[in-house]
Image 1 (cartoon, chains in turn yellow, brown):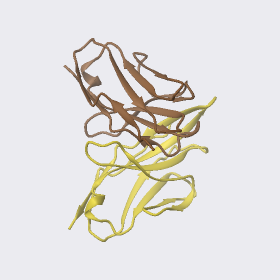
Image 2 (cartoon, rainbow over the protein chains, first blue to last red):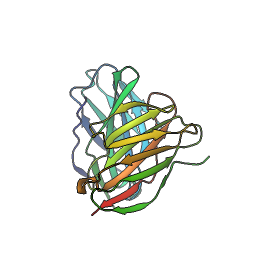
Image 3 (spheres, helix red, strand yellow):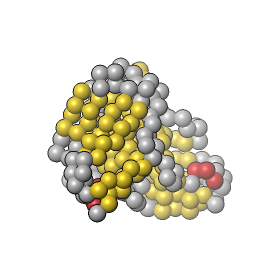
Image 4 (cartoon, chains in turn yellow, blue):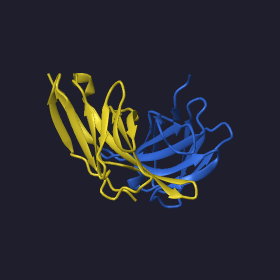
Length: 113
Length: 113
């Protein structure tokens, strides 16, 4: 099973770009990576998903190097409302139509005015 | 379009009791996943159901069991409650066998005394 490691916390000023990296050294060939955002007292919210190289949507970019042992979530020009906990999730196919989902412990991002 | 809902919002039980938590999936979604989130930790995968069949299970004992109904709503049952079962229980729904974009409910806060 994939094991994930993220920094516990990060601080950033408003307007800066923030990069959060997740390490998943034992990721398997068919596994893919998803990132979620969670505010206090709420369920996580989907941000972005990818398998390799770079994926971009309207809120973030996801960079996955060729060896796929890490992934980096990039948030452009953060605002105070981006203060939240960010989780990487590795989805693993374990055969016979069965899946395993492994969340990281989360990175608490604090955006400073 | 109705989002993912969970009931109850909060629950207090005593050690040894049994509890049933409920989840209503987002309209059109046929996969539901359940997670346990302890305070300050990332969500831990309990199990997943696709079209009423379990298609993934995390490292949780058999006293954690579940069901998915024909309308794709779901239940999580926990028998013989232990103090360590106190946590936020999250369900998430998605479309398709592979749990791509998951939509999370607000969670049920379970306290075991």
